[in-house]
Image (cartoon, rainbow, N blue to C red; front, side):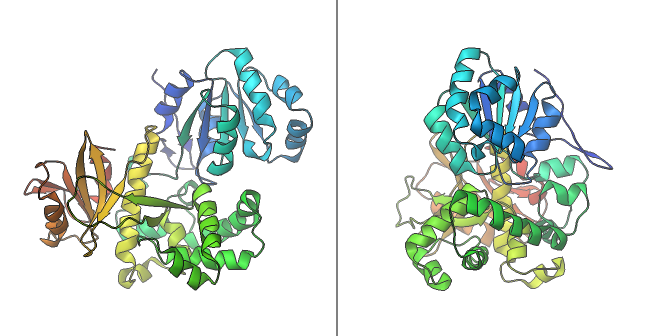
Length: 398
């Protein structure tokens, strides 16, 4: 089924890569659940793409009251096909939705939207298991921006700007967007997921996480710096992960004959948000910023996630680090064999780009599937493909 979709701006259109996967799953499942960060484009995607579906936002107090007080009546009045936005606000609705879906016995009739994966997944697992397909929609990808001629060719500028649709549709400056985004997130989403009493402490914790972008997670250190318990850190990290602020890259444990680090690494779904939390107010500040390489690595890994999620695939991204500090930034296992990817900010080819790949490749089957993502030109060197960051979608496992 060939479908086209565009997000309209005042100048150009931005095609969302996830559209074909969404149409495919609507033909296979009664319901499709789309989660992702607030303002990643979920509502726009669904409303523009699915014109036959009636739209209901449960952030509307009247609609929320109707859904809570009379869930059966609400669903009966919703029509043959409908979209429920921020449906996690009415958890009782899920049980009635199961019955409604089973009675209809047709695919593609219900689309659920939500910005909090923990609450959505909890209710879906309890009530809609086997009836719903899950998709994740993140902010614009490099590929989407490039196709729409919105891509900023300078990596510092792209990292600073970030990828949220509104920034690009309305040509907003990050300083005019992110502080308000953070404030809204803290006031609404955090308190909806879990009752965090001290938002000032949570805000300080969020900024501490930004300072650990691309680093191995050390719960004790983070707890000490935040002046909270380790259990509180675990709880707060789960909030940030559930609301698509941060993600973790888990270590790879393949057939590597070395002592390996077993803790995950912490990243942000959007580098512009991380920059704001790090008090970066001008892109020129990134030129000498000590975390510039971490943010570049973050941007590359987030782009890999977007490419896989847009196709309905799981993350599958790991990292590899031994006890001596040797590290490969990204490992993806294909047909039982690991493909290694190093991520470097530099434009110049260097032997350092290949050192860790060569070290961990020893003893493993030789492979053409090793890569370096960097700021230079696409080329091949000693069976390692070098890919410019703007062309990261060329990685074969995406």
